[in-house]
Image (cartoon, rainbow, N blue to C red; front, side):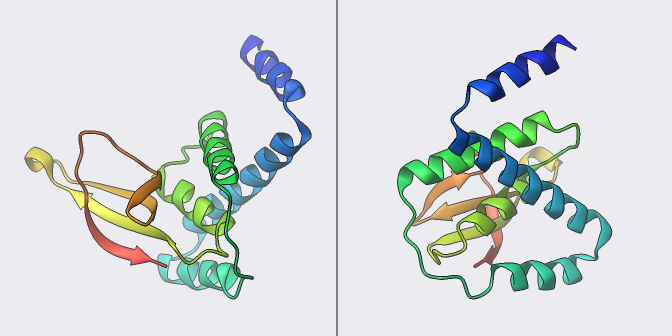
Length: 144
């Protein structure tokens, strides 16, 4: 109970713009998680592609991108669901859909016979969300 109360007090202290971004991040992450659970991946891709299609071209300021990544990370860790790298990367790509320079990548690693997969978002070769230190993932798929 104390953990909930501490989070609520932190919430109250946030500026309204951060509260709004956290609410938006929560809604988008929950919808993505639900879509990934209930739909086949092919159907999810079609629906998601429709949702991010034809946005107005935008150039997002670095401060907004940092706030967005912060909000996605905070919401992902606060929800009682397991929000792993793919829903987080999809959410970031959704919010930044007006800038074609952001690329969602899905890759694999095979360190010592243990297969692992990972999703992240890059812009001009720099990882925006999904950085994993000490593990090298080979990109299999770029989702623009």
